[in-house]
Length: 219
Image 1 (cartoon, rainbow, N blue to C red):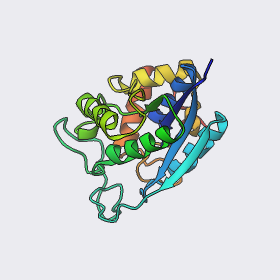
Image 2: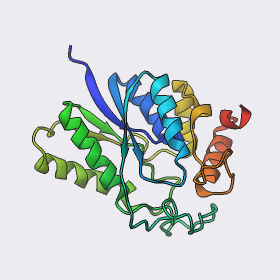
Image 3: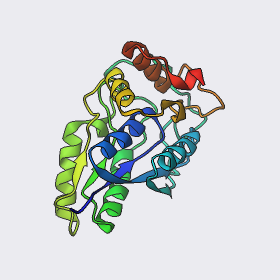
Image 4: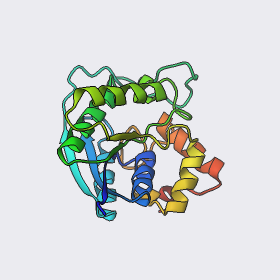
């Protein structure tokens, strides 16, 4: 029987690492795509590489340039939000069309190696306002690749974490034995997590609601 192949977008964070372990459980042979886009938290790249190696997954690091910036993840002169956003706000950490760009690379990679699926760890429950994390976006993107590529009509765009809370993702990861101590979530990318940026706040809230101690803090 032909083994299933998947491209997994791996950032090195909590969600994408859980996603990788879930794709593996579903029987996919995974190739990880890791992006270096001059993000201020480039430390996540090293986490992603460690996780790919730990799972014995193939991986590629793709370096791209977004010189127009427009996001506090790309422009260090802009302040990062500190976990106080209202649901209707679009965070300053939004990178213009990032998921469109990343998924386009993933589909290109997938078409080249005849992959069956592309996995992305998008999540809309805990994060607010990202327009490229909505289910409507992924449905339209699938239609686009069906029309605009050669042999990818059967490639699925998998978003299994889309409607899960952070606590639910963490509980899933615990069952899958995800090494959360290797993941990196903080937007600042310093030696230790800042504890006050959106990503740190959401991570802490998720572990608290799951009733689990964050192993990164323990180590």
